[in-house]
Image (cartoon, rainbow, N blue to C red):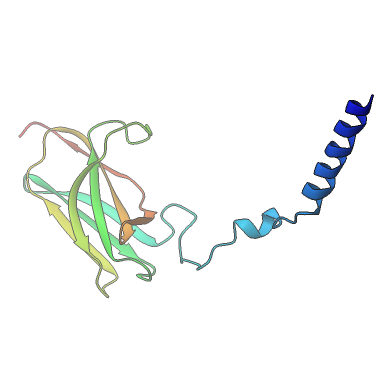
Amino acid sequence: SNLMKTMFIILAAVLVITSSWTTKPLSTLNTPICKIEKSTISGERFSFFRTHRQGKGITATWGLFTNAGVTDFILERTYEDPTDPYSFWEEVGNIPCTSNRSFKFTEQNVFPGYISYRVVAMNGLTQVDVSDISTEHIVQH
């Protein structure tokens, strides 16, 4: 019986001590330290994205509403289903962002088939935005 009383007193003491500790409210834990200008809607920065056949290659052209926070662009392509999240997107080119509002890149030799392209706007190593997808059908050369 004395053992039970001692256990009860120890448990009560532990509860009183731990309940007196204060913790930060959860709402302040996820507050960003610095706000980065970032699009939440895919393609929000892009005013247009087009591709067209050029000789034996493909030329991609795109424009921006704003260059703020963009350091460079990665042009990517896939021969797989562009809507499949598991499709492999290959980097075709890396284009630095300038004060211009439109950009162009030509891939010289492409294989026959359906090729889909997209542009990823980057800020250093951080992906800022992704353009819409443009698909070209290349028949045998």
